[in-house]
Image (spheres, rainbow, N blue to C red):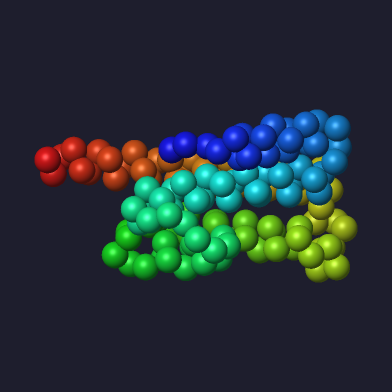
Length: 131
């Protein structure tokens, strides 16, 4: 997997925002960085360039023939909801955006990224076994 310069910057900004207590900004940057990883995951799984927003990507990735782990898709859907709340401030409850919430979202992003990487490794190993 390859991280774009923007994705790399978003991870860095998320860490800096979290470190100084800017929870909402940390969540926004981390979710945006995760979307960058999702785009690369999509590219590897579908062999096509990603187009459209996060929801469009996960809709395609849920096609059964692509064999994406359902637990990954469920977690991506939850993060998409959090991403959408971040983009629309009137829809968010202040208690869902404190330091503890940021820590939870950052951890969930980390877990989702790990799941995407693990799935791609598993796919590569399966290809080698077939060859």
